[in-house]
Image (cartoon, rainbow, N blue to C red; front, side, top):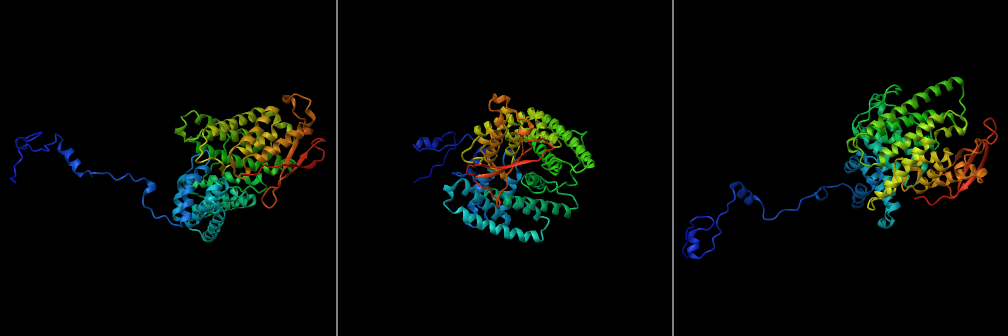
Length: 498
């Protein structure tokens, strides 16, 4: 066969046309386009997502499974209304390099699955969770003996996971023990750094997480652990803060609530101060705290005028939760030095504002519900304790009934407080006791006299859990403030806690 040289005419050469051959011709593409065509492969490899990259993840197959579940399901559920670097980024990363954290994460994830997705666990989660918990505790104790500076974040994260795990198990005493343990680690860290905590995001978020949790200590019969880093400025009633984002507003609220409990708890059930000198000190602290809360609200209102995303609001329920805690906290601060219950009648507007915000949270929760990551558990108590106080202390009948309805319908288990079912039953009992003498009146007129009001409703867990039916100690002052306490025990049936 004779070879015929191509004439190179475009688009087809004359030699090929004459001989009847098919000429591939020449493209009109530029040299740059032609080079790209040559270098591009005939087929493309699929884009590799981060989940498909080859990464050697430590741990057994079950551990890896539950760590993956934690990152994709458990962690988003635990982080609540506020964006969290700890839950969403730092903790999953730490679980890959720290065995203590890995075991604790796997234990929490398995326990969460066993509690809320029992069909998926197939009976494996409970034993596995306890095994991982035991391993985490062993390694945690080893690190605690002689921690390096870099270990403190690991210790705090692990302690936070222990708190979460015991909350899932509804072991109240152990939860409080771990919260106290975390606060002691913070104090130890502060001492070893000459009162200078690191200012990076993770360190500060861990610190604030434990300070929020520590608010629950005095509410469940433990002592409040004071923690005031040197980097934290003293309260200045003349200065209005500036919040660049909602995280700063939340941290500021946490500091104020801790200071507020430091004022309220020493007063005790009798609301009697031991001396006139202490009384003056308490009144001074009350004025400073009240002004600090007012200043917080001014700064918060200013921040809320900015676009939500620019101040870090990714969930519209977050500012509502802060509003609830503001209105209830300022009411408690302004009322704590009064010896009679009628002082709360001056604050119906604040109670109503808190209930309004809680009802909006219920509505938004229903609208944004995601079946793949249901919000059935939260480490922080954002709504239930505040609305419980409103249901107990607000005697305006309609507002009070709305608060009780919120407790009945709240979908998320908040730490030690549950979903509000226990608080709902107790608040309903107190309503019945206080309005017993007013059934002949229209609902809106059933505001009880002070002698008919319940001053305290106390419940005491047995071996870290609550009995069912749950005994509630009722304390009243039927013969006036100077009269003796009238105490009796009532029982409430508790729905099965989830």
